[in-house]
Image (tube, rainbow, N blue to C red):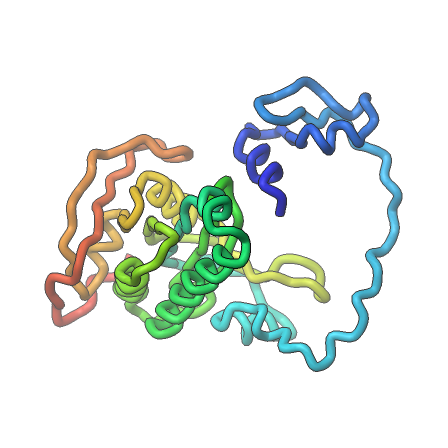
Length: 271
């Protein structure tokens, strides 16, 4: 994905489609509206040649399963699945300053650092039975989403996610990271046609985890109190001032999660 794509996406408001100057120049002027920030608003559907994508050839012999997160592999191969509501502990991890590091390190070196960071997240998540859901590109960063509880749960998802994040954050690396965590209800299921399905998780817990992550500084894990309350592992924490978060009626309260401080004997009561 080109940097211009994530830049204009970050500038759009509800109901808008913003396009880059390069794309605007390639379209008929009747489709292009007023300028907005670094791009232009799309005001009409452009005419386009409709044709099937070229055949990619045989994929036999390729390790296609390696492209699917471990926790989702068995699920997406089921002949029939039903969408469902679940309680999950969602965690967003932000790999920061990738554009700056790309300019400083070059493509090959940055690729090695990204591989090391993503691999460490995948390894820690697998060790703690936390589903690694997806990665996504953002403006100057790359994000990873963990969704403990979907499609599978350990019964101690909050604890497992916090342990995973603490382990990931404690590993050395050039790319700085930050994370946000929340627990709550979501809607899960397979989306897309039978030949190209994806397992996805949508809901307030995911959105709130993203809001908490965006408030964290490099090296910090920000967690809501209900995640901390439901963890059998007790972490040292530092509350921060409540802050406004997009889509939330009330200010969001969160704490910086530090090292492990203690353990308790039994799990916290479920939601």
